[in-house]
Image (tube, rainbow, N blue to C red; front, side):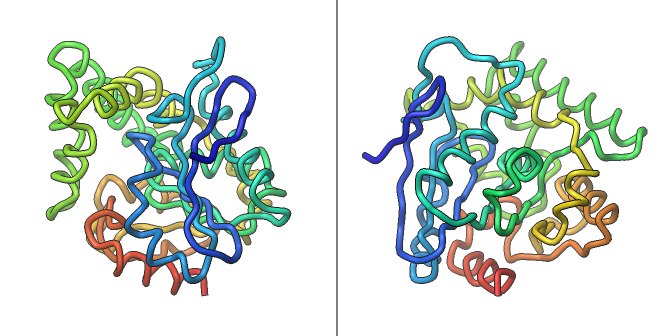
Length: 269
């Protein structure tokens, strides 16, 4: 299995196809394998790289960690992975909290990014104060539910506001600890170290403004104007951009991978 050594971790990744580098950054459960189906449809056009973010699945932690600064560490990992795999900047697609990582990557290492597609980042800090407070309260409630009643109950709360369709079912399955030790460990790791930090992290809109020609705000067609779209809509407004729509909802890359890949290719073209 291919891997790259970075400070404090060994990052596992897999590649599909040939062509310019397209790095896919996963959200909540951190596994690159959630992109495997869509990667097969993108492989004729790109070298598609799927990776396990540090601490998830086969990307193992090495030594002490700065969990208080984990978001920037994830962004640095993406930068180092791009440097390892390509002499040119990469096209980067990040979804959900992976889109938060992708935005931080563009802020910290713009030289590594040719184009960034930010798909429904839960960047609550950009919302107007009333909605920001409500969002932070919901996230704390989800975390408290996890600590009091376990991951399954917390995921029910987390997915309750998603669009209708298969999104909630798929997301709960991805975080269902009864499937095995790997999923259980990934799920608990996310609740403990990412759920609150990534959703509350500040977004440097001034830096994104400087790199706005690279920035593509994206949301699912089925997501409508739901809670997952609010933050990216605010960012798009600040950058004077339009939120572009792609087939499916929050996890369209899993529910309808072929249609999702076709939509992604249209955006990139």
